[in-house]
Length: 154
Image (cartoon, rainbow, N blue to C red; front, side, top):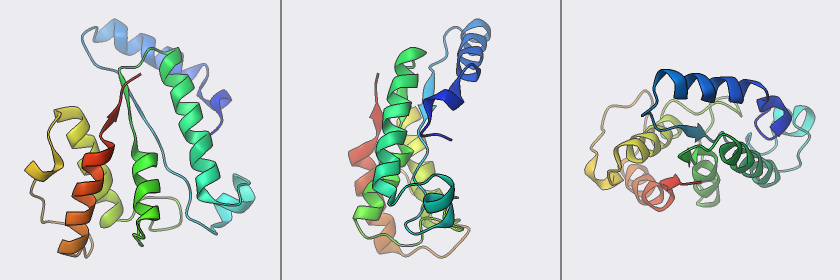
């Protein structure tokens, strides 16, 4: 589970060492996962959290610790992005209470990844082909929120 640092080891060490050996000039990023949807069975009964914010806090702590441990170049803050979107009253981020939805969820995450890796501003990217219905007003709001998140360097 992404909120439990014990689940990262020893795998994250093997993976980081392998990448550094095979691609010494590569940048190494941690992909931060997101909390389960409020009220979901996975949140309450499997992860044992009362609300997504508590789960997200533990995910952030775990990712920060692991990123520091492997000397990552940064963290792609997908979980924090979903938290911001949730607090900004975006509905439909999840398709099954834990995977990203095919519309807003995937759009927001892909935009964050692209902006983080390319160092471009989200306003520079025009995407209009979605796997699900996405309203233009939501696209504009997501672009602004992604611009506020971007990358967390370690």
